[in-house]
Length: 381
Image (cartoon, rainbow, N blue to C red; front, side, top):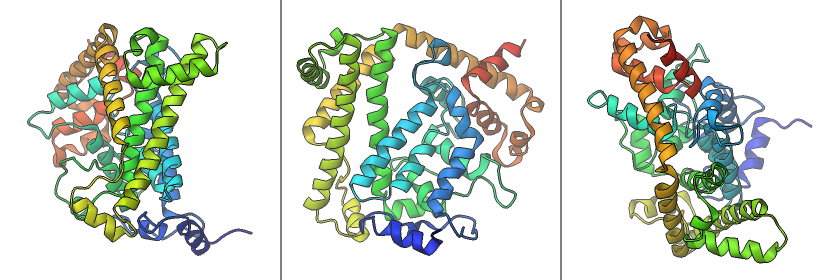
């Protein structure tokens, strides 16, 4: 028997704790729409993100290694799907809104420039004095303005709770009704756990990609306590396993440890601070008390691991070379299109009157995939 929308609300909201975001509370959008008779608002948000052009482009955007390096490495798309899986699991176990966590995760990297963080860095530099560039703000700009799929409104008109979750809660956003709401209400637990799900995903899986590229080694990782402890456990458990299986088991073990620690520590913090309602959560937020996070021991272990990755992987000579090449491509494109505005697509040109030529060029380039940016750069004489 097909369930109507009221039955869906009742069934889904019964699974969510009072301090989580209820589906009934997620219905409000910037532009009012008629409610779907068979789909919850966040189901529609998820599908709108999936169907967007910017989401599809993530498959050809760099995570750490460019597509030309091989077929087995993470792209921005596979990373996004991994974040989504972790966020859903943690939210479900904590009695939170897993659909909201999923939507935030799926949209969180839509605004990333080509060539990974190197692309963001160079666009930020090129946009100094013209509004700057930051991928979280660009993700919001995409879903509110740039993604064109509906004649009734700009963007894809996601629910306000999804939009608020996309906004980094330490970020400086332009004055708006949505930003005022974000600052007044504080972040949802779903948005906070998605931030850490992102960290867990890229920390664990960058290790795997770095090992496969041989930019880092098991021997050098043994200086990191979290790796050494888990590797020792796996080696004792699987005495006959190959090195490849041992390293994969170690990465899987670390991921499981981080997800479990995040879940159990957050639950303990909820109990310790007597969080029973969303009002309790708002009060705690205003007092600067952190609810979502790791235990103290794991927090420090993760910091050490991230420091290792920064020094040995992200600053590896070959990674820096790839990053520099990507930045050179973006810089070339930026200079060219500023002087040839007629060559950027009409949708971006139309926004110049409101946003200026620098933002129009930035929007166009930041939305490119790695390979399209490279093709465009090669076509410029």
